Image (cartoon, rainbow, N blue to C red; front, side, top):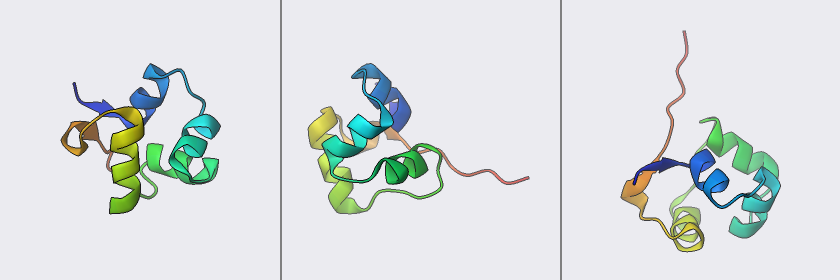
Amino acid sequence: MKMTLKMLRARDNLTQKEAAHLIGISPDTWSKWENAKSFPDVQKLKVIEEKFNIKYDDIIFLSRITV
């Protein structure tokens, strides 16, 4: 099942702060990832895959749309 970072976090009943701590980043960084203001690097993607038990191909990264 494909999921956004927000969906992964909600699935595991985590706050942004808790998810950030799990991955080893700041809550601000996690928020930026969820809101497509920045994206995780390869090392952090591997941690996300491991901690959330999901494959990279199943993570949906939102794109930033500007009008």
